[in-house]
Image 1 (cartoon, rainbow, N blue to C red):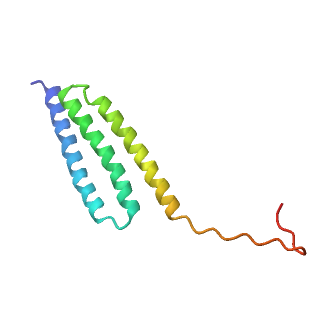
Image 2 (image 1 turned 90 degrees about the vertical axis):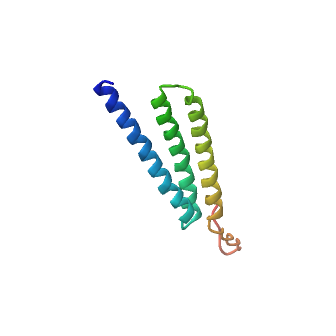
Image 3 (image 1 turned 45 degrees about the vertical axis):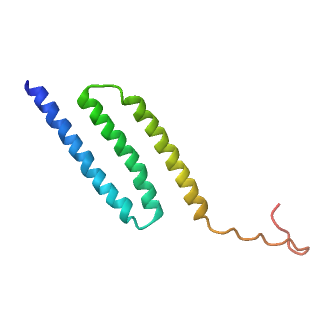
Length: 110
């Protein structure tokens, strides 16, 4: 193997190790997350990490088979994040106060 190929393999192996370490730390955050929002963000990052792992595998194999799969996973991760954010926003919305009743001596906003 030539020097660029050796460097390429070394960098690819390093990328896979970083993805694996990040995955382990992410699973720890999902398990121990103090709030539901922490867990939701961790699951979104997990989707991105899976995409990164597939990208590294695709680059190591020099195969484009995983690109459509990565695209679908990105779309699912985005829609899942938006859905979770909307759910949390509705759940954490403060209760609305009733508007003051209009009285004859006091005019309300028009």
